[in-house]
Length: 328
Ligand SMILES: [Zn+2]
Image (cartoon, rainbow, N blue to C red; front, side):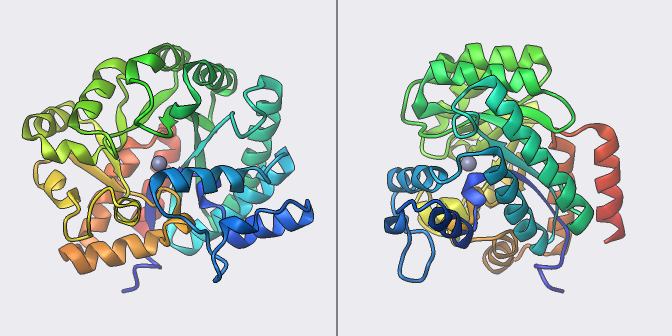
């Protein structure tokens, strides 16, 4: 049994954050943009703290300036995901990076991403859906524009709305207008919380933004009553263990709370977040879960089903993916 070959469902992946470094370096060279400082001597991304990671991330994004760039990015990302056994993926895409919040430019970007997704699906059998994402540290006004873009393009391919970025900036309630607009438009909701913030941040996010999934949410493991509430409400956590260990949100794989959360019947899933920035892949996540907690193929099957149930795509797509997983 090879972890690489087993079929996987991934719910938490930032499209730009999944850009292979060679792809970003190539695009920078084509455009004569010097971002050599973001790469290390082995050609990978040079990242350290979370704040530094955000700077490197934004520098990498600066070379992506057109819908065509995003079409090529999506192809490169999905090729890598499919090579690691991913059959269904949900990616965060931000109007702030795709057209600066302008609705018409956003439409062109998302059309190009969807075009690439269709091509990758035909070629590599991987299905992609997108979650329009506002960036918390860009502030509530930009979040409103992102929500308007999301509502304008909602449909089969654009299935959700969410928030990423620095949790230390502002409060969840500052973004309630955007989440309410997205909810009323019919979008499904997720929000990053409890990666750097404490259990209170998870609780405030659930109360003020009412998402059905939480990005990370690992801080909930420090509060038994909160874990119980999350388990009862059926809120699903998009846990990214490799990301948490790499950035130091938890000290080690051994100390990662995913096992505790699962033991308390919190619905957990496994994702890579920004894989090349954190030296990970879906294959590596499962190799490490196997090595650290002894998780086996049965655990993967179980977590795939949790993830598929919590996916934001329509039922027909879920049925199709379920059959793919069962046939694998
Ligand atoms: Zn994330």
